[in-house]
Every structure is written in structure tokens, then in C-alpha cells.
Amino acid sequence: MILTVTLNTALDLTYAVPALVPHSSHRVSEVTERPGGKGVNVARVLSALGHDTVVTGFAGGSTGTVLRELLGALPQGPTDALVTVAGNTRRTLAVVDRSSGDTTQLNEPGPHIGAGEWAAFLGTFGDLLPRAEAVALCGSLPPGVHVGAYAELVRLARSAGVPVLLDTGGEPLRRGIAARPDLVKPNAEELAQLTGAREPLRATRDARRRGAHSVVTSLGPDGLLAVTPDGIWRAAPPAAVRGNPTGAGDSAVAGLLSALAEGLGWQDRLARAVALSTATVLAPAAGEFDREAYEDLLPRVAVEQHTPAA
Amino acid sequence: MILTVTLNTALDLTYAVPALVPHSSHRVSEVTERPGGKGVNVARVLSALGHDTVVTGFAGGSTGTVLRELLGALPQGPTDALVTVAGNTRRTLAVVDRSSGDTTQLNEPGPHIGAGEWAAFLGTFGDLLPRAEAVALCGSLPPGVHVGAYAELVRLARSAGVPVLLDTGGEPLRRGIAARPDLVKPNAEELAQLTGAREPLRATRDARRRGAHSVVTSLGPDGLLAVTPDGIWRAAPPAAVRGNPTGAGDSAVAGLLSALAEGLGWQDRLARAVALSTATVLAPAAGEFDREAYEDLLPRVAVEQHTPAA
Image (cartoon, rainbow over all chains, first blue to last red; front, side, top):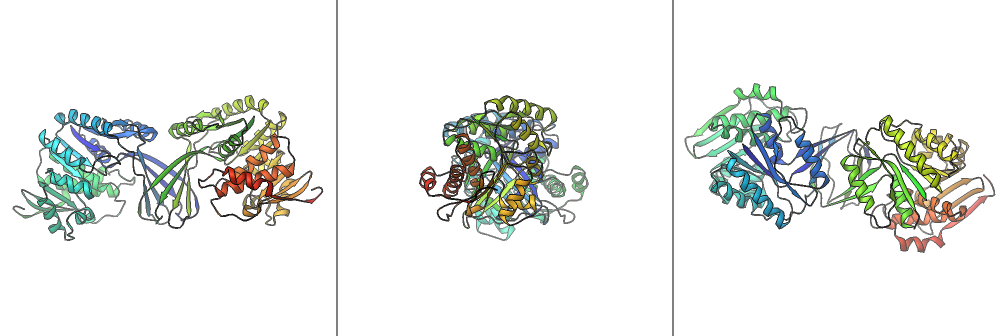
């Protein structure tokens, strides 16, 4: 199975309003709720691709209960191995302005995680690792979790011989990358914050020198840039697409993990990641992927190797 | 006891953000949750004044459970006689911009109420009425409840000999007022919509002719205008105040009901209503009232009778 870790899970709310006007009152015309947090999104895509997938991390309070109910109601959804905490799982709210199509995002900080709760999580993580073909560590840290948490989890995964992917930003990324994860997947912004470099190839190489075996940088609509022990690769969709980029990065992570778990090489990993993230931009619902578009795109993703080795 | 009806209860969320910028992403720095809906707010104030108070209406789903937990946790709070429904109680969200102090409001529509749920509510309402000294019918109707619902409840209260106050707007007010409630409390906007008249005295008299025994119009910072069988009254705070007007109208309703239940006349009813709503504007937390300010203001509210009879 593939394990995804979401320490700061979220109940993702979407409100549709005719137009968002600050300092006025709005009737919300449509409300949707979905289970969220980066690792939960990754797990949903992996499950939809047919992988046996387990989600862990934290959930608590009434919002945590709703998140778990929604997760449990997904057809062929991931297995819930979330650790129950005393605090309330955070909500994230996307307010969609129907007139402009723009989205305004409001993210709650998340519950405070106590020392006992972190210890309980480490127990669960340790129990799940031996069965995992790969593990993904995704998203922000909730209050109370130490900033070196991802570094600690990377070391545990590596000790257990399980390939580990890290997708986070800021100081947790800086600390985590030094613990030598197999793969990190920053976006251009996270990479620039980490390395100070703006030019993608230079920044990606710099990130790799900080400890990751491979770095796959997402370049938004331009696809992915991978710096790996086997060479440098660029992968791009066959044509630019318009749509909602929410969840595209999580779908790319799912594509990389899916191909990794099947023992496929970089060509296939990157093709799958680009096809899935493009099919996510094209899907009508935020964070879902359009399966037909995915199957159509997969053989048409352009993957080019630039040099034989990094 | 005093009974308040809130057919569209709400879990009121407040998010504080440094500044609300449409089409951008925000970290919410502070989240507060309180039990809401107009009749619930009225009941909270009545309870704080020492009245035995019961709330009924609808609550359901995970948000309904949280609302009831928060209501139950209030010290000397109202008694919960809400009817459980299948749908989710709505959330209302107030986004407070810390830089400007402005509030942006987003209100969910509320759950669909089925015919069986409405019948269950009528049963509860009928059971509670004989014990009520007064009843307040407050706020919007959730989807599925017929537009003549308040007219039906006004008739039931009048048949039971219980004084009934109606505080709503739009078509439910138009229908409800025709069923001859003892008191309606529109604001200037609701009144203009009902009568087409903008001049407060003319509009208030017009509203009264539509069936209400008495009409008390809230004029915002200028206080209240009452057209009653005993005369026309104006009541105003001793000085203009600055603060958050959220809940000021609900506090005015609580003041009117409180004095009515104690058998006091218009002078005292209006003084109490103006002092409470002004003390609500002055309170640091939205929808609460500042008790010291209330006690200070009460003897200083200017209540003037304009004519001996309407």
C-alpha cells in the first residue's frame, strides 16, 4: 500500500457567491464540503487510480468527524488511519466569485497538537511503515508540532527502507530536506524561498544539494523539472489548458508515487504526474481529476532528458 | 417562561484576518464559534437578564450538534427545545478585516426542512405555548418552510392567548403581519420593503394598518419609533455611540419582550430596548451586551410620547 501523511488535515468548504464585495453581506448560493489537506488529496487520486492507499495524520472535533465521514463515504476511497486529537480539525474556505471566476481563500490555522498526540501519531506511523511501498509527507504543520517533524518522519521511513516523498514549504521543508528524503516536490515559490534562486534549474539543483536524492519542481502550466541521480528531465503537457489549478500539485505527487510504487522509471513517473495534474486543472470540481482527459493526455506528455546525469 | 423561535438557527463563525483581499489567500488569525440565529440571540440576552427562556426551531447535522453544545455550555443559558432535522444547520461567517475594522458577511442558506419536520416542530411549539408568557418569532425561513409559516405560528400563539412578537422581513413579514401579531419590530429597510414608504412615521403607521397591534421600528443609532394603541413614542440613546451593531436589533427585541413579560408599559419597554441595543453596540464581542453600560444607560434613555393615540 501507499501511505500519505497529512498532519494538518482540513474540512475544505467551497462557497459560491454571485460576487464577493468586501464589507457587504452575501447569501451563499452553493455550499460544498470535501475532505482535504494535501496528503488526503494525494490519497484520493491514488485510490482513484486503483492503489491500495492509507491516510494518516490528525483529525479531531466536529469538523474532524465530518472529514472522516466524507472520507469513509468515498467509493474505493483510501483507508482512514488518522489519529484522533482533542482539538478541532481546521476548515479551509474557498469563496468562488461567480461573476469573475476568482477564488478567495481563507485558511484556519488548525488545532494545537499536544505532546501525547504527537507520540500517538509516531506509534501509528511506525505500525504502518512496514506495509508501505512508499510514503508521502504533505502540507503544513499544525500548531504544536515541532518544526523538525518532517525530518524525523523522513529518518523513520528511510530506516524502514520505505521511499519517502516530501511536499511542504518553509522551515519544515528546509529541515526535512536535510534528512535526505528520496524525493521533494516544491513549486517555484517554495523553491525560491528555500534556495534564494529564481532560475528553476539552478534552484532545483541547489535544493538537491541540500540533501534530497531527487527534486521535482512544478512549474505550473509549464509542467515539471526533475533533477535526479539518473539525469535531468523536463515534462510538459501537450498544450496549455485553462481551468482551476487547485489540487494540481497534489495530483502531480500522486502521479509520481503511483509510478514509483509500480517500479516505473522517471519517464513514466513524470508523464503520469503531468497528465494527472493537467487533468485536475481541466476537471469541473476543484481537486478532482478528469479521468478521460488523463487517459487522453498520458501518451501525449512530452518528457525530454536534458543530460545523462545531474 | 419566554419562548423564542428560530427556524433558521446558525452556527456563527467569525474569522479575523489582517486584511481581506479578494482573489488572494488568507491565514485566519482567530476563529470564534457561537450559537446564532436571531431568536437564539434574543434568548441569550433574555437569559442574561434573568428570564426563564426556551429556544425552539430546528437544528441538525454536525453544525447543529456544535450549536447545541455551545448553547448548553452557556452559564444560565436558555433551555434547548430545538427540533432535530436531517439537514445541516447553516453556518454564517463574519470575516473581520483587522486593518479597516470592516466586516464581510457570508450566510449559508440553511437546510431543507421536510413536511414531517415541520409537523414535528408544530407539535413542539404547541406543547410549549401554554407555559409561555410571550413568544418571539425571529429571522429568515429555511428552504422548504412555507412562506406563510409565521402567519400560522402567530395564529397559534393568539389562539393560546400568548403575546407574540414577529421580527422578520420580506414576504414572511407581509404574510405574518396580516395574522395580527401583538408586535412587529422591523428595521427601516424591512419597513420600506413592506410599505413602499421611506418616511419612518408614515411607514410605521402603514405597517400597523396591515394588521399588527403595535409596530416598533428600529432607526439604527437614532433609537426606536413605536406606533401603538396607547400612542406614538420615540426612544433614543442619550448620545451616539460607536461600535459593532451586530445583534443590536436582537437585543432590542429582548428588551421589549423582557419588559412585556414583566407587565411594564411602553415607556419601560422602549427604554429597556434602547439601553440593551446600545449596550450591544458598545460590547467588545459581536452580539454580546455590556451589562455595566446597560445599567448606566437605562435611566438615561429619552422616551417621548408624541400623541395620545395612534
